[in-house]
Image 1 (cartoon, one colour):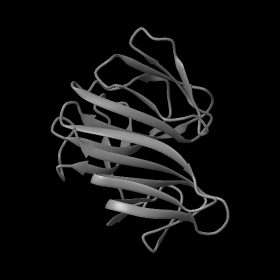
Image 2: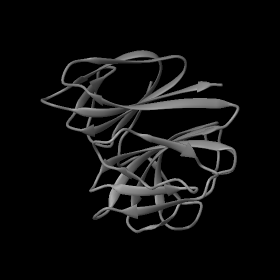
Image 3: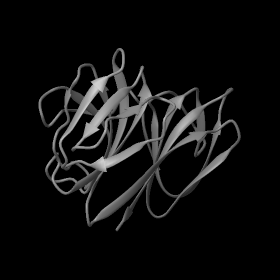
Image 4: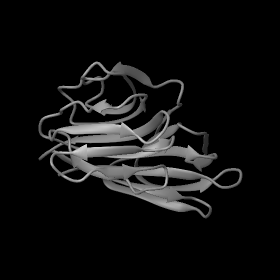
Length: 186
């Protein structure tokens, strides 16, 4: 089990030079943008523009804070993402452009190297305790709103916990929301 506080994550520049991402976890540890097998990060999106291209990588994005983001991926119709919408998965090697629906947005990104790892992401309303299970892989829970109790640790907004196996997540003090990620070998 490992805790990553919102203020402590490793910050890296975007591959396209247009901003900065706070890395929550990467495998193998310390891998750069061209060598990771999987990566979980949060990004502050402050302007409209193209997303970086990651060959042979699958990506899922969820809005954590802000008005939302519209993504145009390949030739498909644009998809609107808000802090209430389900996470959106797409090929990270397809051309993608983001357009803010209002002010700045913080999003959660999960990327896995196609053919080596797969991932899933889901929003979790933890008014009642919920369980996240990563039988043969790694799980990441990110607190989106309120405070969570996970593995005996209190997490605030933007904080994350990484673990293997199964963990119960509950609201710590009032209503709370989280995003759960499971990464497994393909």
